[in-house]
Amino acid sequence: MVVHDLRRRAVAAGRDAVGRHAGARGRGAPVDHHAVGRAGTARLPVLRAGVRPRHRVGAARRARADGPPRRAVGLRAAVHPAGRPGAGRRPRRPGRPRAAPPPGGGRRLPVAPGAAPGGHPGRDGRARPRGAGRRRAARRARVPRRRRRRDRPRAAVPGGAVPARSRRGLAVGARRRAARRPGHAAGHRPRRAPAHAGLPRRRPRRAGRAPGRHPLRAVRRPRQRVPPPRPRRRLAGRRGARPRRLGVRAFVVTGPGQGGVQEVPDPVAAPGEVVVDVERAGVCGTDVEFWTGEMAYLHQGHAAYPVRLGHEWAGTVSAVGEGVDPGWAGRRVTGDTMLSEGTCRRCRRGQQHVCAQRQEVGIRGGRPGALADRLAVPARSLHALPEAVDPVLGALVEPGGNALRAARSTGAGPGDRVLVVGPGTIGLLTAMFVRAAGAEVHLLGVTAPSLEFARSLGFTAAGAPPDLPLDAVVDASSDPTVPARALDLVEPGGRVVYIGLAGVPSTVDTRALVLGDVTAVGVLSASPGLADTVAAYATGDVDPRPLVAATVGLEQVGAVLGGHRPEGAGPGPKILVDMTT
Image (cartoon, rainbow, N blue to C red; front, side):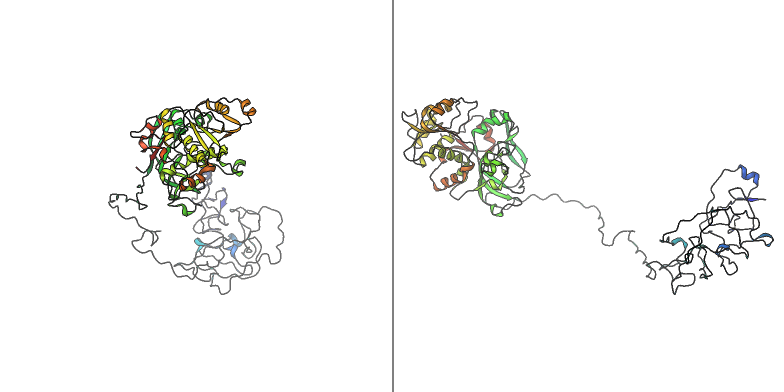
């Protein structure tokens, strides 16, 4: 029987045997485990033979250069027929000549001093010797060399020994190598013990503990019955404070003639803002225009439905945001309607109320209004209310600020005569501030009840326009014909103040304005006059309480906007909303 390797070459059965298998010698040489004839081999497919990891190289390769060959553990010595070394071998294919090794370049690294026989200083801390299965790859840089084929044996040298070579392929001198420890595979150099060598053995896992579970890790308990939720307690706070809800009530207008009370999210104090518990809020003519759909902002793109109304208000600060003085908490306040962005040219000039990017509480830019339980506003817009200014007066500060600015725009003082057209809330408040300045006040209205109510407030000259020269005329009406008529009533060199808004554009003859050397002034907001209005209310120079006809609840706001006058309402023009009920 002829034994072949996988390259179909004849191999002597007893020569160069590795273990119990016949085959060519060489490191990791493939072995044909089934010896068959040449004819049978030709019919077999070309397969890759398995490599036995522990059968690496022959013993002759490990022989010392100055002594007889040794037998490695588990390997049979090479047998040469007829006593001729290398007999039966195929001559080696000539290759490129190899360069001579550098001086000392072919030497192995010396074994660590004091190492145990076989190169190992001792055990690695485990119950078994550190074997071939736990070796680590050498981390030294290797010099690239030409690799030979694994199944091509080397030619033997006289004496039956093959010059030993290092891992870099360079010849090793006559240096003796330490004997290998039993149990180590042939061809593997000894390595140093790992860093954990000599440490005590690992303690066994305790019974009853799952692998990988930390001893302090929480363990899931069996399911327990969850008790029913406890009722929410009423939050402690000031006397008469309303209990907190998950949401708040707010009056929302969803379209012309449509709207009502809705549950909305509870406002949160953002950085620089406060949350106010609203106590009183006023219903204004601007709110009526949103209800009817006549508001100019709806058509100019500054506002859109749904709208949460309310810009005249007073309340108590219940929460402050980041960056806000904590001293505001618990204080009674009112606030400015105009909320500017603070960086534009107008804002830098102190005209924040005409900022192009402004928001208006309950009016413009989608800013929620004060017809709600709670309101979030910037802290910079707040005005503290003294004890003398109750919630009713506080809710009238915003319209009073507009009236104060209109009165000051007339420039009237003692000895001057001023005509106010339109005895509504703004008109009557303007008349009060003009009177407080010492000027003579006349009122012009349309309906008899409104004029009668004006007389009850001490304005006896209410009715037909006086046949006297007028130093100033204030238009506080919504009649589109009044702006032009005011120019005819004022004395040359006088002043006309426009604060009322008509539903349609008005026509003014500028020739009368120019030829009469008349100064015309428009007033938009109360912002510059809020602080002085609070002071006037606190001192009693102006008392607007008689203007309040009735106070209603939030659910009645829709009827008030629709023109319904509450039952039992007085003659005054103002309706307030009590938000504490």
